[in-house]
Length: 199
Image (cartoon, one colour):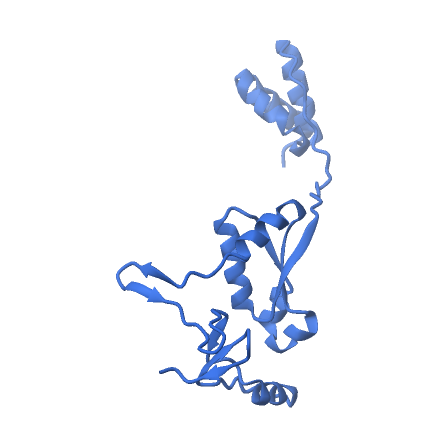
């Protein structure tokens, strides 16, 4: 191990061989230097008459305070991720809350109030505008052609899903400790509750 005078001499020689720009770079991060290195740097800056100030690190983490507001709640994580992706594609920063808990145990989603989609309060109006955009009836898919959105034959809503979870079987079985994610083999409308087989 080197003694203090040897280390001081090594640092003095190191700093003496540096350009003023290199010394400025080290002085900008002086908080990471040892006391001996800081003293040797000050002596070299004074010897050259450069007048470079040392920037000391505050030693405190800076916490950015945000005013986040929930704009939507989702029972299922994939729906929340789709909504988050839609906002991010529109350039709106968004966050999910309770998504890790739902990912670990989907059954507690209702207990937690679902997965929450959060945005900065100043972006809430724009985010709701993006999420409330109407679903197009059809659109072109590259390599496939025109895609026709499924809609409810009863109320004509686009808010439909296929193979929805059979709650009458899945929830009691999960409560008994043996979750059985049984799906219905039909379409369901979330607007009017109508069920139909796919033709």
